Amino acid sequence: MKPAPFEYRRPDSIEEALDELARGGDEARVLAGGQSLVPLLAFRLARPTLLVDVNRLPLDRLEVGAGEVRIEAVVRQRAAERAGVAPLAEALRWVAHPPIRNRGTVVGSVCHADPAAEMPALALALDGVLEVRSAAGAREVPVSELLTGPLMTSLQPGELAVALRLRLREGWRWRVLEVARRQGDFALAGVVAGTPPDGSDCRVAVFGAAGRAYVLDGPREELPALAAARAEPASDLHADADYRRHLVEVLARRALEPAA
Amino acid sequence: MREVELELNGRRVRARVEPRVSLADFIRDHAHLTGTHLGCEHGVCGACTVLLDGAAVRSCLLLAVQAEGSRVTTVEGLAGDGDLHPLQEAFHRHHALQCGYCTPGFLMALAELWERREEVTGDEVTAALNGQLCRCTGYAGIVAAARDAFGT
Image 1 (cartoon, each protein chain N blue to C red):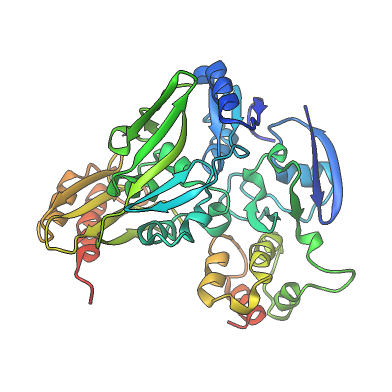
Image 2 (image 1 turned 135 degrees about the horizontal axis):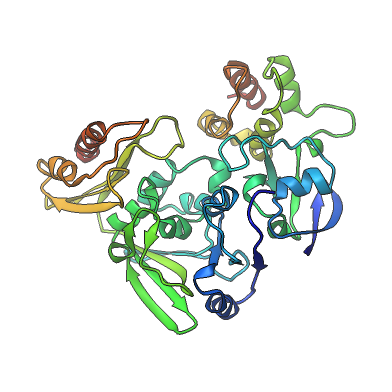
């Protein structure tokens, strides 16, 4: 038993969950898949006094509509990777390991905002919009305005992300590439790269190379260098900053190569 | 304290625990099944992998209270009475363990695939093994055992 003590609530309705989160304020945390939060609790890097477990809320649907996929808050990554949405499946195969993806959620990973994680970058690349509710009402947050820094978002105390909408652009081809020390580790650097069907601007979202994921549009030939120029990578024992910047350019170039 | 009741290897188990108790600690300290091992206790090593309603999960990353009402299978529930499960037989045959600490996790990560073993691909077996750490064998025996058991 490693976490500090906390109060645990497992509401059955969204309204009840929002009331609990309002009561807990900034001392409350949402528990969804728990694959990032529980390690933080174990290390006592997070010490919330209230955990609101959302796993039994009616938020487990994934709907693929015209040009869009909507993923609710407790849809597991394993379910999402089998939903027949190519860029989602392509990105999720890089996320940790099957037992982690059996519990981890897509929405939770976006909200956790790890700068080296695949899901926030994918959500940026696919014009993600987060549907957020609180006791005070509802709002929509574009993922471009959600990610503010390492493990930091613009979500406020009392707010619950209930779903993520991703735009599926007609005819686009997406590739996800990354380099990690071992399969399933967080990336040293990685890219989510999209090529349009008509030769117009391509798109690259980059993760692991700055305090948060970022996205750029531009011509296919120029985009890899532009993406690398925007990188603000850290140096640590796994890789230095120059190597990470180099990876961004090489991975972006490979990911944007025309299909053979 | 909170009352938790779940089905563990076909047996109903009930205990009063603090919400911060992990499913792994519940299994070991309250249900007294010590086949589920704890290595890192933060989701990296995979030693504590069990099946939760048929899906392989890290029992150190799940609170016992979250498993309330669920069906949990540990390595003790793998074999029938007396006999080894085919996965355990394959591990035995290929010398897929040395100290054995990581073995229950490897077995349970693979056990998730066992029900649909006819259609499981080599890539899926590799992906299942990827999330588990072993510090003694060098993995060769484990990979051989898994490939043999699944015929991939």
